[in-house]
Image 1 (cartoon, rainbow, N blue to C red):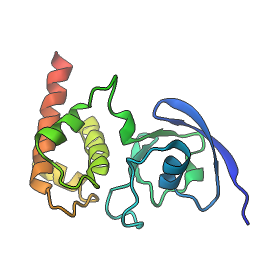
Image 2 (cartoon, one colour; image 1 turned 120 degrees about the horizontal axis):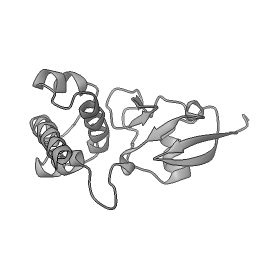
Image 3 (cartoon, rainbow, N blue to C red; image 1 turned 180 degrees about the vertical axis):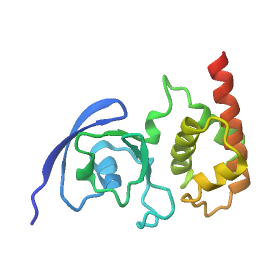
Image 4 (cartoon, one colour; image 1 turned 180 degrees about the horizontal axis):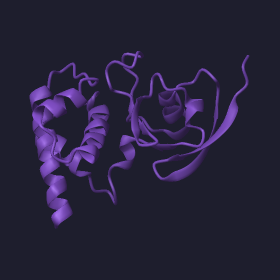
Length: 162
């Protein structure tokens, strides 16, 4: 039996320590040791985006990313996006645009849209489609997701000028 190792990292802005086994992935770590269930393992192959987590400023597939790799890293999950019990502009936009049905894929989409708008505050339709190609919605809310991205971009701009 392989022994666990202790890692330390920053999780949603707070320093944390965890014991991980070499075969545990990031989703397992977040769920079992920190009770964070926003990133969800669905396909287990890094193809659907449901498990998207940001590590050191880049989105990763949490189902494929070994937990031990976050030692010393900065990890951001969907749970960190609201501040003082207020939803982020991206989260608000997803609700207002009805960009989900079952909601299973929504946290992954929200993480990717947040990163997209951080990089490109006013993306074109083609840029949105390209950026979100790794996220699948089995309920087929893609038109609403496109609307949500555009609405979130407007909300962010309005918030920056307010």
